[in-house]
Length: 248
Image 1 (tube, rainbow, N blue to C red):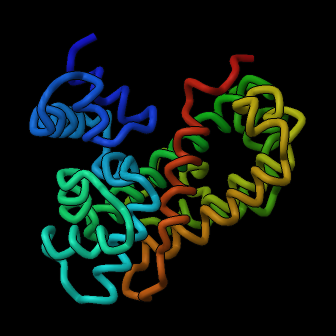
Image 2: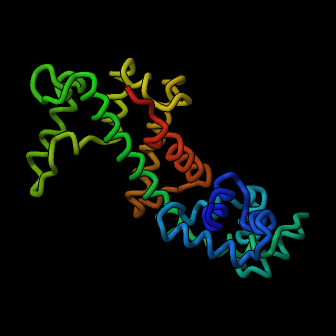
Image 3: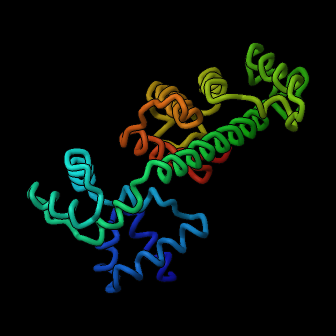
C-alpha cells in the first residue's frame, strides 16, 4: 500500500493527523501532504480531515472562538488549554484552517449529490431487474413507480427547455423515498444490510436528508447547519455506497 493510501486509510479509521504521523513514523507535514494528495485525487474530502479531530476538542475550539472572538491558532490553543485539554497544536491549527463553513458546505453538497445519484441509479436498476426494461405496461416505469410520481416527473420533463434523457431523471429525494417505501419487498433484499433491517429508520433518515439538502441548496435562507447534520450526511453517504448493495 502506498504511503498516501496508508495515511488515508488511517484517517478513515478514525485517526487524526497527529495520530497518523505517530503511527506511520513520519512528520505531520508529510501526513498533510499525503491527505491533500488524496483529496486532489477525489478519494477524500477536506471535511474528512476536519471530522477526524476529536469531538471534544472541536467543541472546545468553537467555544473559545465564540467567547473570545479570537481565531488565531495561538490564542485558541491557550484558551483550549485553560479548559483542561492538552491537544496537539498541529491538529488544532489544521482544524482552524478547515473549519470555514464554505469548505464543509461544499463537501456536504458533494455528499448529498453522491447519495442522490446512487439512489437514483440503484433504484432504477433494481426496478428494471424486477419488472423488465420497457417503460410501457409491464415494465419498470409503470409497474415500479406510482402514477402521481410518473405524472410529476413527466410534466417537469416536458416543460424543461433542455430536457434530460428521461422523465425518471426528475425524481426528487422525496420521490425516491416513496418508491423505496412502495417497493420495500424488492429493495429490502438489495439495500446494505444495516439499512435494510430497519425500514422506518431509513425512511426517516431520507426525510432528514431532504431537509438538510434544502438548507444546503438554498443558503440565502440562512438556515442553520449543525455539526450533527454534517456527521449525519457523511455517515449516510458511506452507508449507501453502491458497493454495499447486494446483487440480485
